[in-house]
Image 1 (tube, rainbow, N blue to C red):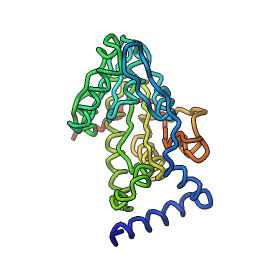
Image 2 (cartoon, helix red, strand yellow):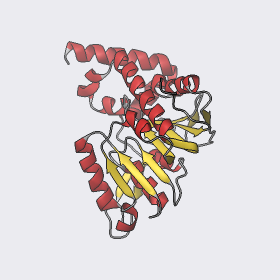
Image 3 (cartoon, one colour):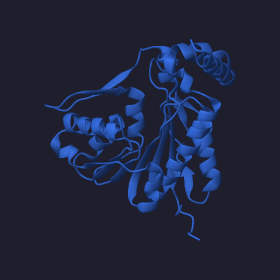
Image 4 (cartoon, helix red, strand yellow):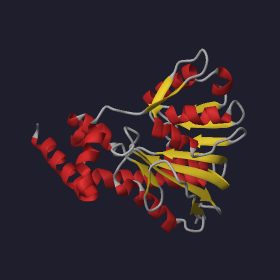
Length: 267
């Protein structure tokens, strides 16, 4: 192992041991394990799609319904998009956005092969910068999913060669981007609409930390929506951790309702 990789692994271990204390060894083992609880989405004459069951439950928390306009800000690889499209049941509009061309290519394949045509026709795939959509489409959507890029610690632990990517500075950088995407989603949301913020990170800065910043910066425009499951309660939402959920997660979830205009007046 290279020295840089050793340093990253040592710092990673120290940081999460400090956060999770005595729980960390069992949580770490669960994150490293390939044992995952899957849910399979399957329509007649279509390809099946398996996703972590916690992710499927999370997407359903958004309560998308027939006739809604829905924005999935960071849609690839497409599992949550499939769940949301199914909820629309051929009536409504779902914008599935992802900035990466390669990820959009895979996303389009999932939509085409997993969903029947009458449901797939409600989905439009776009390739915009998620953090800017709220400026160009203010108050246009009934529901917004902000399933943001994150540290994805389980992925790093299962592929030690990629652990070199991790650092405290990277966590801070991701939190800044996550906040920008979350604000964009809030701006794109209609007043009275609901937003689901989610990550597959176990870092508090990327989860409750981002929500705390939003509540401080936009206190007039947003309120928390409590929910009882899945997972265990955090300060502002809930987190599903695989050491206690038999391979479900990791997944952080927070539900928000827009109560007033969230955009700052232009100078």
